[in-house]
Image 1 (cartoon, rainbow, N blue to C red):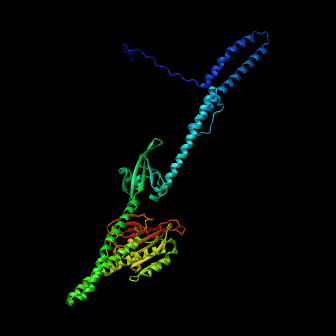
Image 2: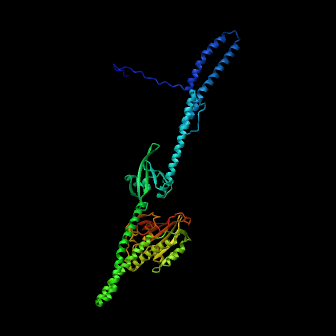
Length: 509
């Protein structure tokens, strides 16, 4: 049973959707309507003439053909320019700005439309060229800056990285793009507060200042992350602080040591004039001798630091690693040093300072071996050292990119590796605290301030020092890098060497 309309409810007619007639069809219809009156009148007039029927039909046929040709020409003249403009606009929508409309002449409705479309195409072409040039400039600037730059999408996937970022992550951009921040181990840069300091797990303990900015690309929000290594500034402040401290300490101690030594010498000289008995005179002489000895020791201590702070600039020239190693090993006679020779290697460095660096490291290795031997009565070491039978092993090798020089000993390792390169710090009874510091040219060579530190306090034996340098290093004047790593338990520290372009990476495993 059908439902009837309720009382008082007006019936609303449903509007029909009119079918839109194409523009070309309307042009044809209008052409026919325009030609139809003339055809009818001319047809009637021709039919009323006393001509043969064949002539009348032929004349009417010619007239109809002429109307068709005129209509086709009119249709072509109207639709063709519009199709041309449609093609130009379509090309513009596809970012192809090489198309232009013809018949772009003024004082003509269609010509003015063509002029405006062509002007729009020129403007879009100029804007596109400017955008491409600006994007190229930004890309070049991003690539050339020496600070890591990253861009992440809303799901924290990497969408942009510059060359400095590739060096930091140690992979090419093809291997990095599309990976998440957690996979790259930089999620702390997105979760931390803006403009704050963070430490990255793979950056060797360097401190990074993080700045984040939001931007949109194709309507999608992105996060731009810019990292600035502030370790250099902190290290420079530390270096200047140590220099000021040494300067103040040296000044104060010199002012005190000189009169103390002079007075002690004068008192010692006047002891013979006193009427003291032999035992008292001997006690005074022994005490004054101790004073003079300690004053001389402190003076040597200060002079050592002063020479360290005034180390001359390095003289770069080619040096042979085998020759350098043989010369250094010959100086250590307290313990056996086994040399496992590698291939012939020549590096661009200061051989004197590089030799002094190796001497200090080898001396520390020998001291550690002797300390372990005297404490335990036997040598405790790694498997490699035990297999060789030598308490200290020195070797070098070539990798695909680097030259590695390794010093391994059977010593107990560093008990407090965090202070290994701190000036004045020593664990030896007769140490001065400058042995390892001499391997720390950050303090004495401000030209090479790079240093990265990652330290853990647990320490077991054995220990080893690894010196790493790029294989491509030559005496071309280009600044190269050598990384020296100390392997003992979970200790990693990177310091620059006394050789320009050298960098030490110290790992305590």
